[in-house]
Length: 328
Image (cartoon, rainbow, N blue to C red; front, top):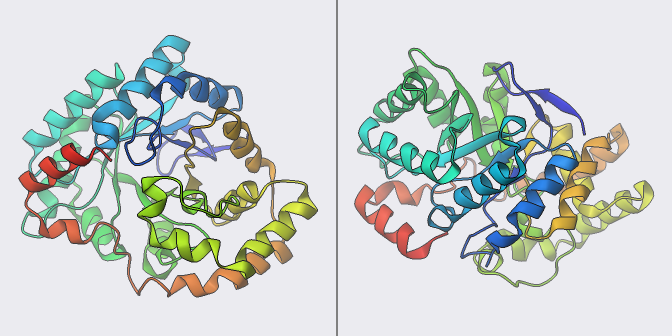
């Protein structure tokens, strides 16, 4: 496993992390009982960055990750990031969410992220200042954001007073390159770490050819990517020549772009496969081939990052109730 310094911090993390959405989530029918084996496999493979959130399985993901790390005696080895929902409109409600996350985890997270921007009528700076207060109260070491467009990222940075934002977690992969338009260039300039979630398009870049989970059935990109023979064949050709897997090549492409991919899995054996992608350095020809075959996906999904944009027009209380019912 290779390591790097995380954004503006002085913390060394694995260049590939592990996303915990699939564990405990209703969307994936995750089995939290497998969590400890997955976490142990990750640590044994050198992965030390783990990402979760309060809304994943209504807290089941945080609880599973926390109990696994405690049972393994590996809390000090791990860099744990969690997220509070954008339905928390003030510092008071952010603190309430963080305290619940800490209770489920059993320890304080290194990184606290705002999962998505707040409703449009709530001042963004109020929430960013709320995140800063969580650092001052000792609930976290660092703060970041998630699903922020380039414009919102700029605004959020301007809101900070005492503690800098260190990361923006966004969807980014070979089938969704919209962030390259205005998020990634600005993030590089500001030394904001880009955490890439859904790096394998929910399995579409691993060789999956049919929808088996709610998460896959709900993802329009999944349908399009599995039918993109040109992209899949190019990934397969490189993986064959490299004697690697399609997953590893897709992750290596993200590493080549300087981002931190956080693939998720419910299968213990996949963790080692993901970790070994850190040892693959694409040559210029391979990187160019992947860039060319996927460049249409820079503009396919629009000119700006719109993930979770519509939720910003839903009142906080309704967001909270809906997510409690769904248990994503």
